[in-house]
Image (cartoon, rainbow, N blue to C red; front, side, top):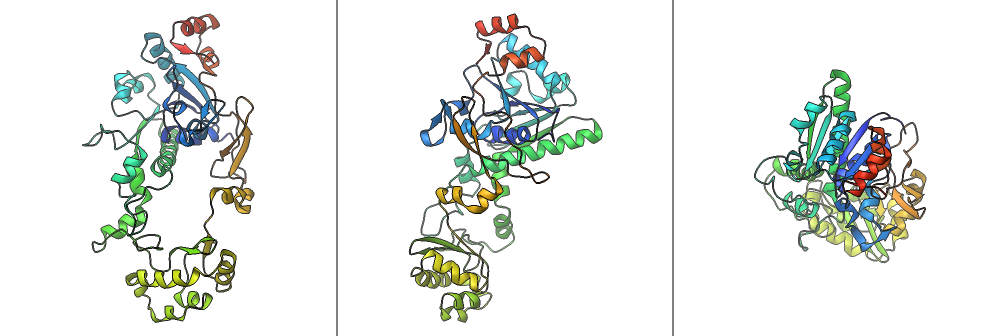
Length: 394
């Protein structure tokens, strides 16, 4: 994919939001250089599921394809000089340290725009660059809790429940990529660089746009939905129901059609307003009936009445789902050490094709020599800087 060909991105990112956001740009053809400490960034040392492949964590694998790796001690004089030279060649600098860290390192926005006025400087943080929470650690579970996302997840008979993925990180990554692309487009029109700020808290709120707008413009009420109903602001039957061999989501359709589909005439007594006001009662009636169906049987009867439904898949079923496979949503490729790995593919197609993988997630410092030679360093200089601990070469 060559959409962003000739765009160079310097990624001073760790954990998930920053790496995944810059991976979007890498998938689109940008030359993304991951700049890490000589000991490696956070994602190389911790990752989910307590699982590693070729000694690399799942956190590293999910956000670092199509990127080159440079390991350098930015705090050293020599390392700082390397970063300055790279900044002069770059189109984008992306970082997600706590506010002020890059300034202390000498590479805050005011400093780097003196080196490269056309640079897009994209900073991601937990809560924003200033304000009462700006110094707090920004991490997905904390953000889900503070933003209200955990509170609206689960039903009224359960405690607040975190979404089962790092939802704010994932959504924030897409916002980061989108914002960088918008800034690059503006630069094409004006020739001017700019600063972009993205934060996890805003990403988590954006995920709840519909819910928050309903709440802010309505009467105050609990955000804890009754059992089975998918969210506090949804009507019945909108939710997930237990059947004999699993679970089925029932989405949109009239109660009259649902009553016919599952032979439950009691649903016909509820009017269009009561699907909101009496959703707990309606959902309980539906659950008591559909628990006697198996998945295929319920799907068949809902299909006949043209109701919207879906079985609830576990990950094994997702991987084997015919539409997922048809869409090419997973990449089955080899790691840098030629070990088979599975990655989630880029989420969009361009002219009918998804971007592929030019480069698997790289071992730390794999392109250190290559990158430094591009900015004028000799083999001997790189070897000397490696020996003194300024660089790490894989």
